Amino acid sequence: MDYKNISFSHGDTVAANFLNFKFSPLKAQKRISKANDILGKNVVRWLIGFVLFLLGAKRKDVSNLLGIPYETLNSFISRIWKDGIKAFEDRRTSWATPQTPPERAVSAPTAIIEEDEIVVHFPYESSVHIRIPYTNNIVAKAFLLTLLENQILDSQTVADILGYSRNYTLYLKREMIAGSTEVLLDGRQGQMQDYVFKTEIKAELILQWSANAIAGKSTASEVLAADIKQRCGLDLSDRSIRFHIQRLGLKKIYKTLPEILEALKKNSGK
Image (tube, rainbow, N blue to C red; front, side, top):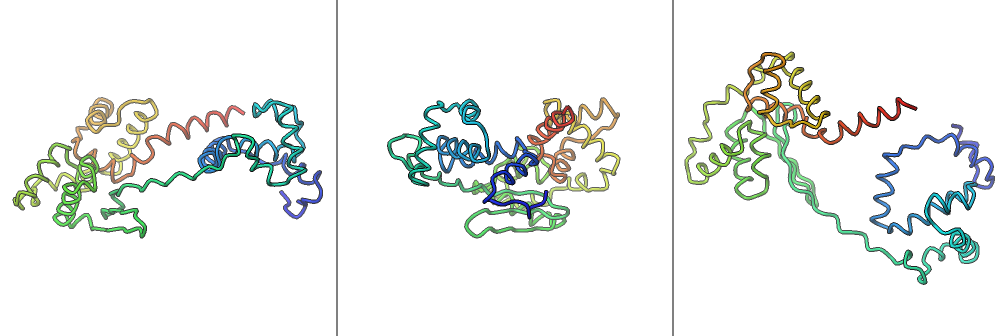
């Protein structure tokens, strides 16, 4: 597209270039949803209607598309020509009532594995990241269990990071808080070492996790372990699977993977 040819003083040039735009339904949905939250659904609807009118759309088509009565749309456009931007602030209509932007909810702290580090993110006013080498297991375990005790991280997150079951993680927390520091020297760490999961095994885990996610089947570690054993004959522990799912970041794409595939299917059919 040649941006030099765009001229807002020549409507035909703008309309011609507009026809060459490629629109993303997914992006449109997200952007309109965000605008609805800030401006209000009705205001956004009128804005879209007026822009479509400016770009040369027939009033009747705009009316049908947005569900605005034809005469109401005509009256609104007339008010804009007369009053300018004030037409969007017309207090005689409920859609123009000023909307108060919703307060943004403060995100909860998160903990993830990035390469060979455990990263705890505190998303407050000044964002803070605390990084602990995964090999420094005692410090990492004590820190995560302390955050769990203070309800800063939930038990499932800590369990996934450490590669334990949720019940065992809660047991470790209770013992540590009670003063039993021996629990920080758990002898089962060897099972979590990366060499146990060769490249081929990781590939099978990713493949099985993706297949279950797409099919809407559970991606819980025990389910994946049973599926991989049946399909490949590999006997993998639930704990090792949980650890590598967290380390590979697979949980982050659980919801987006089916959506991406569905979008690809729709685009391929065009």
